[in-house]
Image: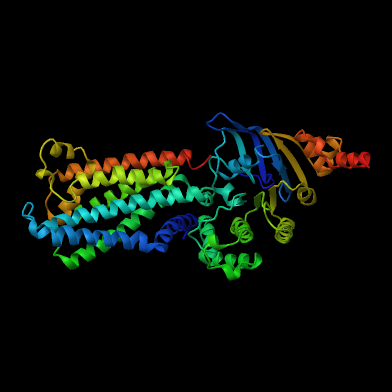
Length: 262
Length: 255
C-alpha cells in the first residue's frame, strides 16, 4: 500500500545496461519530494533520457527500483504511469492525428471519460494558444506549436509528476518564457516537476534542487548554491564545467584572460 | 465505462482512425483490386474455363478473393501502422500509458483485423451483386474467416515490431505473403496441379485457409475442414503467444 507521504519519485540503485553492453545508468539513486521543481543536468549521453525512459516505461531497467508516489513503476506500473506526464525531447507527434485528436486519444489512454477529455482539451488548447489549430493535422504545425502541443499532451491527464526532457530546445524566447510561466504556475499549484535542460540559467532560476548526472551516475545534488560551493566555484555553470572537466571554458576565466590581454 | 475499457477503446480507435483517414488507399484501393480480379478472372476469362468441381469458375474464385482481401489488409495495416509509429516515436505515447502489453497487442491487432473485415464485407456485398454467391456453412465460414483475419493481424504485428525500415514490410509482403496466397489456390484447385506441385501445395498453410473459407461459402473443400480449423487455431495461438512475449519484453519497442 503506497505511503501518502511517499516521495514523488524514488529511484534506488537503478542500472540500465543495453544489449550492446553500454551501461547507461550505473546504480542511480534519486529522490524527488512532492511539490519540488527538480533539475537533472548533465552532458549529452550522461544518462538523463535513459533515466526518464526507465521511469516512464520506454526503457526497461536492468536492475533497481523506481517508485512514483509510492507506486512501483516497473512491474505493476498502472498507478505510477497515471501519475506521470512526459513531455519528451523529440517532437514525437502522430502525423495522422489532428491537434484535438492528439489530446483526446492521450486522455483516452489514461482512462479519462469523454466529457472530461472534451473539457480538458478545450482548456489546454486555450492555454497553449492552439484553439484555432484544433482540427489541423499535427504535421502542419510549426516547431513552436508542436512543442506546445507536446506539453499540452503531457498535461492532459493531470499528472502529479510532470517530466520535461529538454522542453525548450530550439524554442524562441517568447515561447520559452511562456512555457516557464505556465510550468511555474502548475508547480506552485502542487505539480512536481522533473526538468532536464542544457540551459543552466533556466535550471538555476526554476529548480529548487538540482542533480548532476555524468557517466550514468549521480555525482552531486543540492541547491544551485550548494553545488557551486561543493565545487568551490561561483555559479552553477562553473560547477557544471568542473563536472564535465571543461573549466577552461568558464566565463570567469575568459574575463581574466580579457583583462590580461588589455 | 471503466477507465480500462476507455483506454482499450482509445487504443483501438486510434488504429481505426488511421486507416479511415486514408480510406481511399486502405479500403478503396483493395476493393477496386478485388473487383478487377473478379472482372478479369471471372467475367472475362471465367467463361472460357470449365466448371471446377461443378462450380462456375467465377464463383469458385470469389471465396479465395474475400479471404485474400482480409489477409493482406490485416497484415499490411498492422505492419505499416506499427512501423510508422515506431519511426515517428509517436508509439511512445501508448507505450508510456498505463496500458498492459496484452491491451497494446490486442489493440494493434484489431486495427488490421477490422480493416480486413471492412474490405472483405464490402467485397462480399459487391460480389453478391455480380454473381449468385451461396453461403453453405456459415458456422464454418465465420470462425474460419475470423481465424484467418486474426492470423494475418498477428503476422502484421510481428513483422511491424521486428521491422526497422519500410523495406522490411514490403519484402515480406511481396516475396513471402503474396506467393503463399497466390500458390495456396486462390485462383485454382490444388487438384489441377501436376506432381510434385500438388503435394508441395499441402505444405502451404494458406491452402488450408482457402479450403476452409471455400467450404464455408460453397460446401466444397479439398482438405479436411476439422483439421484445417484445428491447424489454424494452433497457428493463431502460437503466433499470439510469440507476439505477447515480444510485447512483454518490449522487443524493439522499448529500449
